[in-house]
Length: 438
Image (cartoon, rainbow, N blue to C red; front, side, top):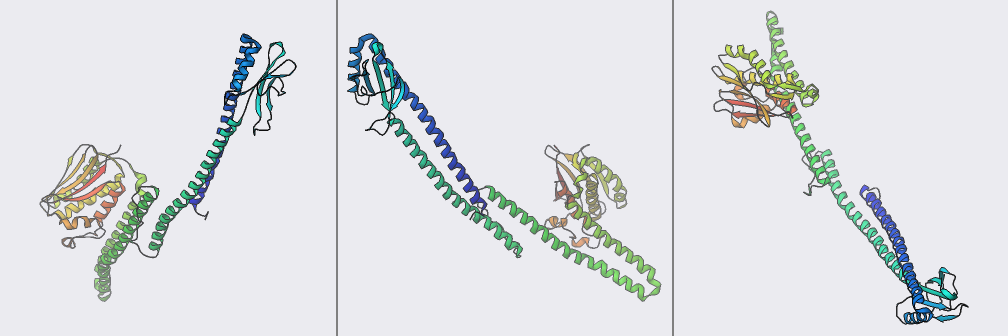
């Protein structure tokens, strides 16, 4: 039973609270008894001083009368007055033999002894004032019984609460363990149930489910990538084989066949290089190169580099926006991301189109966008363009591997940015929104 961490903690805290109740009870009883004893002694001393004062003002007869009157009062303390030779003069304690000062006198008919203060009066008389400590003992007993019930209550609550808590925690941990076992057995869609109480175990379940969702997404992505690699590389590999076979069949065409084979091999190597680069970016290994960067400066560099290509394709390429748009990131990756977006626009917008690169900064975000007025992209295809190897049907005849926008999405995720394809009407806007550095 005590293999359960919850039960061990419950037992530990139960014992700790029980010991705390015992310690508190002992301190309370001792402190209360001391305070009552002081009050008890003060009452006896006050009565004795009053009778001594009575003796001084009324004489012996006044003290005798006062002692006899007090003896007739119910609940009063006990008194005694003795003569110079020790003879009893008045009071229930007159026959008692006690020394001068404080003393304890046992009584046969009482469970508790009497505490007596004996003082000398003028002319050799002695005054005895005393009372038993029964009231103190009664209060002590009441306190002890109260703390005993408190001790029992703490133990019972600890046992019952620990058992109930252990059942609840065990049931919820068993659900997490059962989910993990189901996933190990292949049920990747299984998730941990969330109660909705927003406690520690609920937050753990939510985090666990998010981790499982991420793992499922990665596995689906891996499966899709494997399928895409097999599909998209089959064509260039088949074409490569055909060219090599043609070169073997016709000796005079070997040089031409080898040149074509090298072109296909370069395309295949570029595809694998793109996949490796995306994997490196998604692993977060490039985060160490982050530093202050300027999107406007990056945009100016890329536009200046691609302006001749745009002019050759009868297109216009220009930079617009703010003079400085600072962000924190890897300048090389940000440049590669913008290059991919510009190349994508130049390749698919068509001749005679206008392409704008904009960089702007707002209060809460910085934006980098490439906007063209070409034919655009159907809404159902916009999100899928960020998948590896995904290409539109009209793009199958153009060069490319379908990894350009996938790399853009990977770079955006690494920088905590959001990338979207938006209809520009006409044309398409590829917008990347970055968080503004603090």
